[in-house]
Length: 534
Image 1 (cartoon, rainbow, N blue to C red):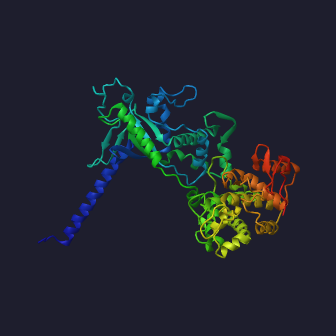
Image 2: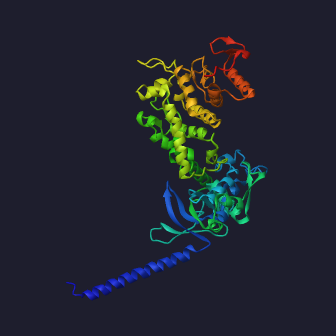
Image 3: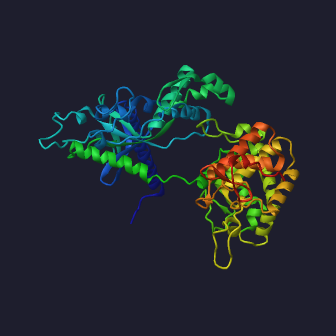
């Protein structure tokens, strides 16, 4: 029986608590001393498929100074073309670690991203740790059978299970980025831009563009950035996963094969997002944000079952879908960009878009929803609202289904047709035409069957409809925009009208010097004219 008093127990508990605090403080001081080392990196060990790796958090400045590009590895230097700096594919290098060529035009884009965006984020980079002896076949680190006596990475555990510790980084240690090379050059470029105030812009091959340069002062002024805060960019930290170039017991060829295999698997297993998934997740692209709100809010898409395909960019002929989220995004872009109010929404070059303000997004949603209000009133869409099959309106006349006959080949049930219509209407509206007048004419065109793609009497035949293959042709999208504008309001200049006649004639070539006119007759090229306006 415990005869200790309550005060004794309290004192003992206090002593244990104090002991734990002293242990924690001791561990903290020990870790602080270990982590502060310049010649080692605090890591956690990961193990998959028999290959160890070491996961760390490192500052951007550390990555800039410590991590080199893969094409600088001694292992690859024999196969590097001295003139282009690129890896030559030959009988030796084909068996060496594969690496995609660097696109240097991304350097300035990624630098701007890091500097301009408050919520910037890079995923971890994959790095190979090597030592000089790895590339010296005569080194005594290889045994008589050509196998490594030690692993090229030296890990010192700080716990009893060997899960966390320090990865030794001696003066001869070399780190090479194998997945994330563009992130590395982007980090280096951003820190250079902050340090020196300017950065030369390069093309894909790495050549400096004469007339392009990034100036920090201009970027700061444009985005109202805090220069003092920018100076802290190098202290930000991101993930780094390090794999040894050689494991103990491996031959040099085995090591090459293992690392090459890891690199290939990392890239193959990364499943790219579909266009629809990108549009669903994009929180910066104003057109995507507007499109996905209209996709779930507009009455046409709420009443029709499975009206919007949120994943893919295409629609099968038997699908109940009316459109896709990717198509809605492209429609919003084509329609809204005709209005100068939305010109800042479009990303420049390969830069990421900047999210518009809430007020701008609200206006964009209203304008784009209004377009669909008018589309919804067209005869075909009224029929779909009453329950008629969207797939029948989409199918071509030769595509017969049991019990339903051939389709109607309707242009506005095809993604490319919807995009062409939206862009044309946006341009007509920007030129001063009211939506009431535009859609009163499109209503007439729809009622007359003028939007049937596979009818030779319609101008879409040969443009968006490939009569040889009896399928859609997306190559005619820009021509279709011009046709819409011509049918509704006429093209403003004789030069534009002449150019459209030439495009229509090209599309109706059916044989050598033979063209099919709107009545189905084979005629000479000069007999192909513009279709009658509505």
